[in-house]
Amino acid sequence: MSALRLLLLQLRGRKYSFLFMCLVVSVAAALVFTVSSVSASLREGLLQQAGTYEIVVGAEGSATQLVLSSVMRADVPNGNIDRSIYERLTDDPRVLKAVPLALGDSYMGLSIVGTTRDYFTPHREGLPERFALRGGEWFAKSGDVVLGAEAAERTGLSVGDEFHGNHGVGGAHGEAHEDEYRVVGVLRPVGSADDLGLFTPLESVWDAHGEEAEHGDITAVLLKPEQLGFAPALREELNELPGVQAEYPVRVFRELLSMFRLGERAAQLIGGVSVLLCALAVAFAVLSTNVQRRSEMALLRALGMNRTIVLGNLLLETALLAGCGSAAGFGLSAAVFAFARRYALSAWGVALPPVAPDAVTAIAFVGGLWLLIALCVSPLIGLYRKDAQHGLQHIHS
Image (cartoon, rainbow, N blue to C red):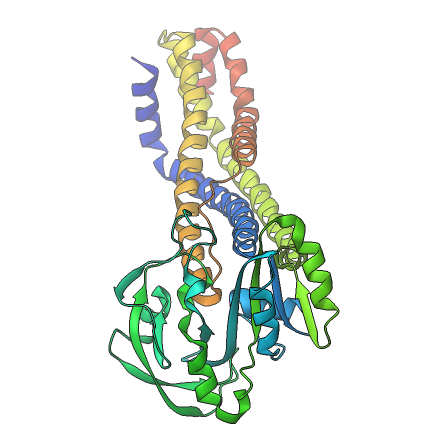
């Protein structure tokens, strides 16, 4: 009889115990793998999104608030700066691209983003397009709106529909403006906060606010220098202007990530505790079946079963438990991670790139689990030194 066939026959007799151990292992593995994946993906996703533009220019105030409102549309803007600053930057030979933003209004909780067509074009000629239309056309005049993919799904708007914007962003929404917006296009998904935007020409926002924007105030300018080496001087000069601040988005996001590390450590602690509980549960389950295993192995010895097959059967069961539990945990982790990616994008506009669990974490988990089970069944190996007669005596006892 082969070791595999023998294993299947034995597992039939203790299938519920084996399934319980697999379930415990899979839940612990899923938690460990999910924490590893989400943490790595969050770091990579935020830094990628922050790296689109090197500098964000806006009104003096909180640097974090400036970056989050301009790049992620996840906070209330600090205020406005004069349009002349944007015009000055477009004429600066050190600036490759300057994109203005006019924020402050929303629709169904999503930000209306006043900007120019430059927002959707590559930074340099020959670079791949960052945005593409799924339907309709680009905005051309005041009142036209191009919807992000997620914004179209959430609002139910489509090309040709009209709506009124509300004053206020970040959950504080005032009364609706009289001016109507018209949806003229819908973007393909890009996997960033732009999926949640409602994009319109700057003039749309200025017209909606009437006298409030008679000077053409803007909320922020996204800046891409011709060379990275120009960034420090540009930032220093802009920070010297009254009421203006210029910040590096990457630095702000790195500071935010350092704050998230506390939550990451807490999640890792929970994962560690779950692994410990998993280890105890598996150890208890394995040890509780040792009496049954001893009887089985003694009987097989008495019947003349090859020692190699008996030992192989023991090791195969150990490997099967560790492998099945870890594989199920990896699948469960993938499902949880897919949900987390979807939720992060729809709720916060944070794109989480697909990231596999850290290889070291996976190897350590599976290896440690296999070692634990092996230690639990190691007392059974002593049976190999007993002869068949002793094995029969053990059964009758």
